[in-house]
Amino acid sequence: MIHRLGRLDPQTVRAIFTEAGSRRWTPKQLRRLRDSGSRNPEEATLDEWTNTFLKRIREIKSAPNCKAN
Image (cartoon, rainbow, N blue to C red; front, side, top):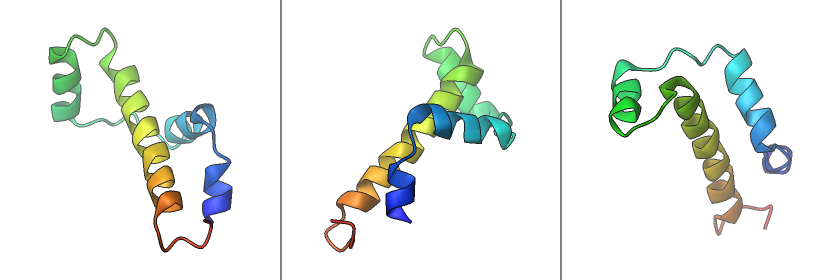
């Protein structure tokens, strides 16, 4: 599974979240992004979800007990 996840690029992950209807962001997240100066909080939220997902893949892959290493 980690090998398949490792092949995902940011554009693909973003498309997955977009198609899955992940545009139902929490008001708290949108407010935080608006308050931080984001011009488009919906897009910024999608970027956050994408980056977090890819970060988690890297964390799993680099774990000492991951057989992918």
